[in-house]
Image (cartoon, rainbow, N blue to C red; front, side, top):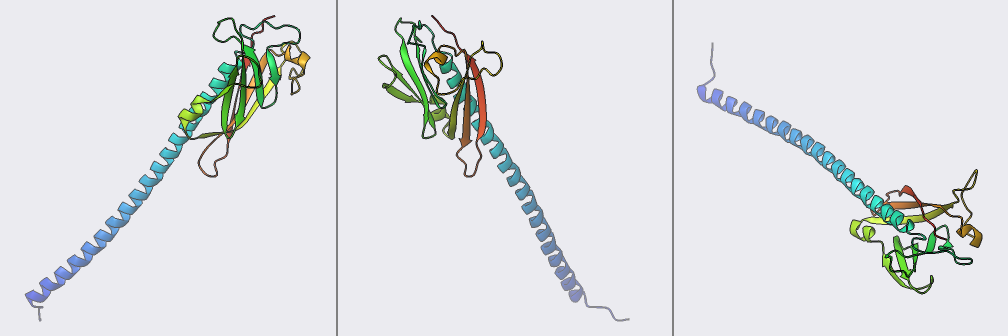
Length: 207
């Protein structure tokens, strides 16, 4: 019986070891790729969730700001015939009188939407002019666009559907006791659909 030389046997063993190393490295690389893909997918999901949470918080800040402003309608302002606290009540804009700082002098506040940002204009003389300021929470959130702003007005004493038609007539402007604010808000990611939030504010009236 003939046996292979020792040198040939060692060369064959080295060849088999090299193939095994290459196979092992290939399997290891594939495993690393799979782990990396799973980690990247989880990271993207976490980032999307964080962004959505941030947008929701920013949207609620916008709504809370609007609710606080609307609750000022008629505060410290004594209505008289022909001069209700609500100067104008439209579907997408409201103008009202209020003495918010309690100095005895009412000012007119106008809230409206323009270019994806809600603005407030304040005037001490009339409800058609004054300095406007952007909605601070939108500027702070940085990545939100207000796509729609709607005001619904309700007469709390009406039986049935208490919603008043807009724009409010002069008699209806005296009847408003509750205002619903509805906002559509969208993040600035391409293709993202807007989501809608709403709140209702009961207002005080002085006569």
